[in-house]
Length: 256
Ligand SMILES: Nc1ncnc2c1ncn2[C@@H]1O[C@H](COP(=O)(O)OP(=O)(O)O)[C@@H](O)[C@H]1O
Ligand SMILES: [Mg+2]
Image (tube, rainbow, N blue to C red; front, side, top):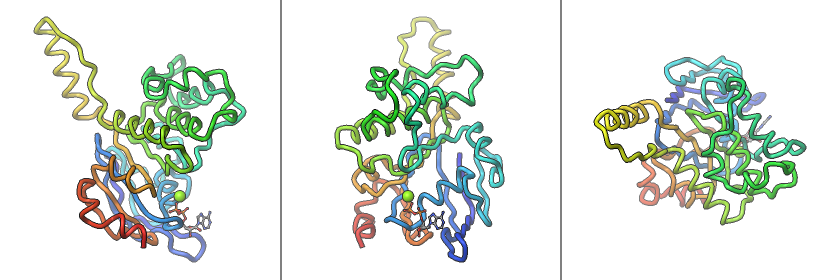
């Protein structure tokens, strides 16, 4: 889905991202861990085209987007929930969610899934974004990214400064989105059964969302990760399967 090769980025004279290569697969959560200041957000901004990468290649769904402007990446299906959320505080919850539909054809509606995952948003549609709690704003930012029906969802430290009950809801949402179960339908006829089978095959091939989750909250990142990457000063110093994170000593490496 996303393939990054030998990405380098500098701020002035300092080499911030150092030859990064990695893949993000559909239907999987890739957790990127690393302490403050190692370059995680800079990498996300490179993926979104908010800062230009100096050298290297970013390929999304078989297309080279290394030089593509941000809006093209969004249109291609990359949803981004920036660190610190960045919702529109003066717009209502509904208007914020509608911003997520900006790339959709006119008349597109906010997918019901957004409200299934975050019911609080439905009850607050008319409130101004800025009046929501931090956790609710984070749900709104994720809801806005989901409204565009992304193929790749990038979340930059979604649990930062958020209370435990909402962290749980966010974790649940990430799981649901990555492994979106196919709508279960009790089918009677052979045609209907075939229809469901075709739908399942289609989703298995292309319909699964890939998730890139930047986190410093180890337990949260581990519980969700299919794959992990550990970054230190702009380089990946460890990588592997989410299931191996404890055994690999990622928690200890993060604490050093
Ligand atoms: N706009 C910028 N100009 C110059 N240096 C920056 C800028 N943004 C971040 N940095 C520096 O780049 C490094 C990586 O920052 P960042 O990507 O935000 O790390 P992280 O998200 O892992 O905390 C840090 O040393 C930070 O101070
Ligand atoms: Mg950051």
